[in-house]
Image (cartoon, rainbow, N blue to C red; front, side, top):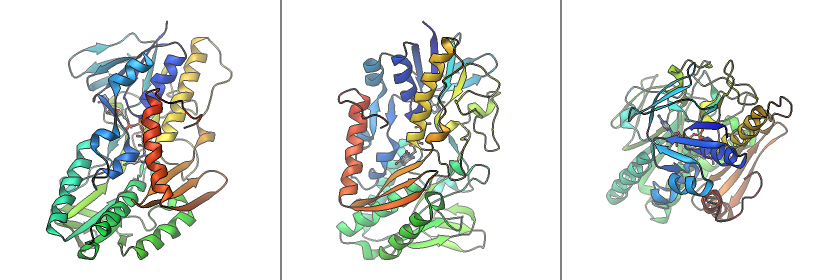
Length: 390
Ligand SMILES: Cc1cc2nc3c(=O)[nH]c(=O)nc-3n(C[C@H](O)[C@H](O)[C@H](O)COP(=O)(O)OP(=O)(O)OC[C@H]3O[C@@H](n4cnc5c(N)ncnc54)[C@H](O)[C@@H]3O)c2cc1C
């Protein structure tokens, strides 16, 4: 039986493991943590609408259900030319027939970043956001700033959706507590039209939502630095804040950028449309750590990571049989799909080659996203059947 090593246990790594097992490979998955973190539902942690535990799936449970070997031990080095992986414990993994790199992305640094918390960072940051918000709620007033940054070298690595979602959730939470009027909420971003990727209609709807919810906007000026009590912009103005939630744009994962792999300008691993790493037969890159091909508006998303993963399992199976024809490409499946939650409703955002749309879904949308979280967890663990494509 051919052996496959998967680095990373998120959307891309776990889906690769499940589908490679279905294709009868001997699969080992390495992760630095013992759980799969469901980022899309983690937006409810800062307002206490979800416990951190509920945004996790035990990797041990997943490995037993899908019968792959699990090693929880951070990768500290990977060398593409020898296909040798070194783990923090000193253990060396080598001799695998195929390698799937699914390590996600690192984040761009920023002067004073330590004064911010990100909903897209390590899971602890989401619970820290809960603690900090709770302090302001106990004080019954505060200035909250939330925003995201850009990456001129790869716009697909810019993650804005969760900043909008969290801002709207905090607004709803404070309204429910009847203290919204004592809080100043400001959204900030360096680009003139944050959210443009989702399409022109989405931009208009989000703008309307900001106005109707009295959320201020500070966009179009670059961020100079963060300070303990605010955001300083390059025009020397300062947005005063007691709590700053900032999502830095992504950049190549720190392990893959020193692995001798081909990289794009932003440090993401270059592959062809079949996720085969350029110049390295039998090494594949999937999910956020791969440089996405495709249209200008493309975005690194969980559902894209899963399509790449399923395709890679298929493509590796063909390669193992010596078949060149019939490989699957992810590029035709690129789309932006998001149920943008507000805590009391949602808006369904979709963009693909043909069109872009945003459909408001009051009340029902919120419960639909909650339902998706339940479905995702239970279907991954094989407790309920999976709906094709989801
Ligand atoms: C708050 C938030 C909300 C989102 N909402 C949506 C949404 O609604 N819809 C959507 O499609 N997408 C959404 N996304 C994007 C989606 O979560 C990502 O695109 C997806 O997580 C990418 O999967 P991945 O496996 O490539 O990376 P990750 O999920 O980041 O997984 C990478 C894995 O590698 C592991 N790892 C990292 N370094 C090491 C190391 N040195 N050694 C071993 N293991 C390591 C990590 O622990 C992690 O488990 C959201 C993201 C965030 C942050």
